[in-house]
Image 1 (cartoon, rainbow, N blue to C red):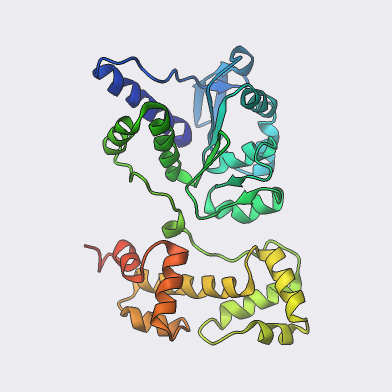
Image 2 (cartoon, rainbow, N blue to C red):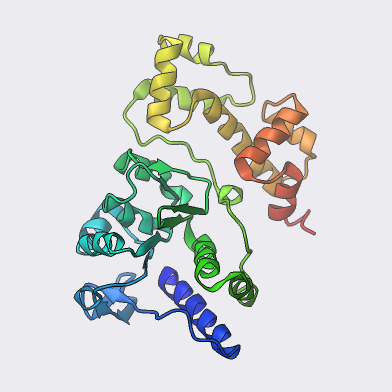
Length: 311
């Protein structure tokens, strides 16, 4: 529901902002549905919608997030797919918010293109749509009139992006301030939690993952893992990348940095102590990898998420 009401409020605010300046409103906002009413969140909300067949042409289609079991959600909403394709072929731009990316991907319009979605759903998205270039850390993608956004309320950053495109930067900045949205934020990285990708059937790779997660404080090499699993290095690296979407080295880095994040969120140890406990000995390497994966320095991360150090 938030992915419907949030954009509606922002677009409405733009119109009010423009009319307040004596200008014409920019957006005609319509809620499209398969029927005249749509029931959301297991019956918690019912909204009035305009049936799809009554909307022949539009300039911008926004696909809100879906909930529940996503394969079923796609099936329940399959009647939207030909309409979305038709609108795009007629010149409409199409944007997905959060898990709405799954419905957008089902249209085939994203094949070979970049896409963002909620970081929690990246493994499932990759398994369902292997021909799409998922960029899990991004909040916004923009390619050939097709947009997608990161998860949850970060999707409002895409709405601001679209407002700037259609109504200008001044209107977008006003809305960012009115709704207190962090303008120009482009990464989900500070919010991501690395939980590993074990939704696969490659048992040797799972054993490698478990070994890494249980021994991240020590130096782990690809050759060591390959020898332990009686695999060639090349075979292990190929299978590991296919199963987890990470190289072995990337996975080791992510496990180490996730442990460091948890320590910084709750503990009182200094940065160097956290670094050593997660198996790093090189300060520059630790800080560089930490910022690459979180978008923040270790100090910035601690100040953001540890109440004892918050400014």
